[in-house]
Length: 174
Image (cartoon, rainbow, N blue to C red; front, side, top):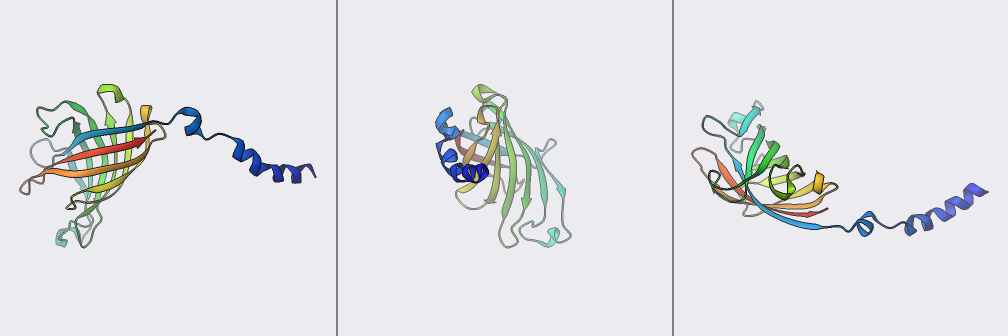
């Protein structure tokens, strides 16, 4: 009989517990930075590691897997802008009919007030769309339990080398 009474009270007990965000004072943070994907030259930061047999014949690169350790900077010029950290992870050419990437990366902050913290980003990146949105699915340090979204806008793309600079705006709840 006591167990049955406890089951009846369980919904009331669960409602009475305050949410973590209400108790801890959730913050919202906006960060604008630049992601530099360097595939050319003697020291690339994006390296293809796998290809499907059909990748060479694909006009979208479908099936290619690329590992990245891309610089993140405060401004669009990689050589003169203040370094903020690295984007480490992978992207996979997942679009058969259009160039779209499945992104899986961590923004690892190595300078400034977020030094030592990370933000995990996952999602679809339709490269030639003006604005792409991906999910922020977690983080560490200052961004522990993070959620939110990242908007990507291509700043420059060199069609000869494949090198790209992309502006990222991160909207983070933590």
